[in-house]
Image 1 (cartoon, rainbow, N blue to C red):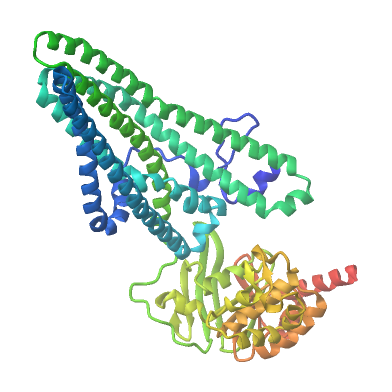
Image 2: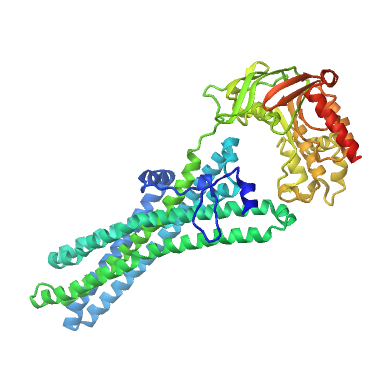
Length: 617
């Protein structure tokens, strides 16, 4: 599994599980939760029902009472028909009893049908609210959260885990109430008509619960494991789809298939075990029910001989027992459903309880439109405790200056950009813009004044016009086209089949790397940021296109503070100030000519680039 291990070591823990083909790697956020049944989870799920309680309770209670009463009255009509209509040979009375039973069945059917439609509607609203809250919360979480979790693992919680709660909200809760009412009603009727026979039958219930209780812990853990396995499959699927080009380029399809086979088999076995434990409720209930029937007919026959009950009452008792074990069976299934729901809700609320590592201060203020003066004072940062990414960085940038950040991979260039945008918070020191500490202002007001163009730009599904407009949603078509012309993207866009209305698929795969970069340029510039960040933004653009962009940038960067991360000399030599970083430390600072005269790290980088260009030229 060497390729898979290497490709995912940053997002997985090396936790081994038993398997047929070797190691499995457990996603860090999907280790099996070993917790007791938590009623707080039930309360939190109930919180989503609360807004609809006034709307649903009166209707549900009425329908529940009507349905329960009609079901409880029918056996008494059967007893009356046997003991009076049949015994006395009264055909008219028998027909009246049959008509009454038929009428009760129709009322029961109508009440249940209306209740089911009504509760389904409410349940879907609750699922909508839960999924909306989960997605909205995830949108607010910090980069650190996403650094440690595969996209597929996040996706499965918003889709599969929320969907697994659907039955609970649409029917489960209401059925639980109905079954409890029905059970209480049957018990009271049995005890009321003959306390001896009623007690003899009901005594089997505690025995059934004692036996089934021992299964609950195993069932809960089994369903937690199923949820975990499914989450890992989704995470791996997402990874494989995103990396299909690499997989095929290195002919690793077979290894991917084998690895997926093992994960799929693990999930299959976990599901089988959980369902097997789930189904163990039914035999317990059936055996207990059979014992109850034996007691009924043995002891009931004795009571008939003693003249304490009638044949009709015995038949009614038999009917009630059938009705009694139905809700008991459903309650067992409901418990299993609750276990599945709890396993899902634990995962969902894990994310909802996750707090952003970067959070606004309680008294955060709006950042006014800035000039672009930036100062980093003794800034230090660690991605993880003890893992220094920046050490004691001091940097002053005047409004309108262009700053180039250079250095070897891992020197801290992108980290400075991430801190400036507050994707992460500094460990020590401070960062100010026009004298405002960025930790004292609201995050949206800060980021709205910073435009970013990344090397691996993201293109959303939709039209090219919509992708550019993403920089400023209220922009007019004329403003969009002006931004595209400014970065020399207009010419290739109008030559596409539908021009600006051309639909691009996920990640813009129908476009070349250079075209995607030009669209991202237009998107960033349309936002009219006071601070512009170019993170290897021209790395994927050919030399001819880059020359056009360099001309455009001279105009577009005028009056804006800009940070440029690049390795190409042509991109950085005209910067007002060049910052040279090495292992998180600021080593050199100055313009191109000044740093060349120093004959230091920057000089070495430039000479290495010249040698490379001569060799490939």
